[in-house]
Image 1: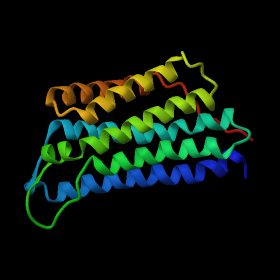
Image 2 (image 1 turned 135 degrees about the vertical axis):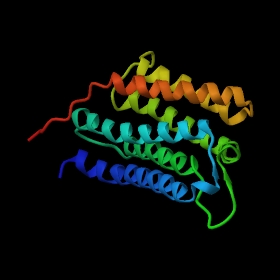
Image 3 (image 1 turned 45 degrees about the horizontal axis):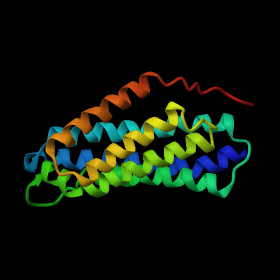
Amino acid sequence: MSPFEFVTIFCSLILGLALTHIFRAVSDLYEIRDRVKTYWLNSLWVVTVTMWSIQAWWGLWSLSIVMDTWTYAQYWFLVVNLSSIYFFTTLVLPKATDEGHIDLETHYYSVQQAFFSLIAISLFTSSVMNHTLFEKALTAPEVIMPTIVACAAIGAALNDSKTYHKIIGVFMFLMYIAFQLTDVILIEYMP
């Protein structure tokens, strides 16, 4: 077993659980849809965090190319990054209940501080990993952009403005679409 395979088994498990959670939550809420009041911004974040989880899994492959050896600190940053993705994925939708109504707008604003704090952690650790694991310069877009967006996420954690939340939600969704369209990672067999 290669170091990459050893490290990514646990990482894949974290992301698999995140995707399982989001798929299950969407399915459960659909089953009780007559009691769920939807909110477009919350729905947009469901799509965004799903793309984020899938992209994170896809991005793990690039580690196979650059990492022949691993330190515990490198592994730890990777696990913190992926764990933050898992946790904000679990917060984006509430648990389906057996009775009563579920208002997704109320839920969104009730978890905004934790949700956006976790997004900031994910983005800050992405910047650290891009600098340390992929040896990107501190001035490289792969380091600067996640840091800037993490600061915007901190703003969303601290800000109750619905306008700010709508802007950051649309911005991050479009950012992820652009990021996925420009992704050049190729997965190839490596004997």
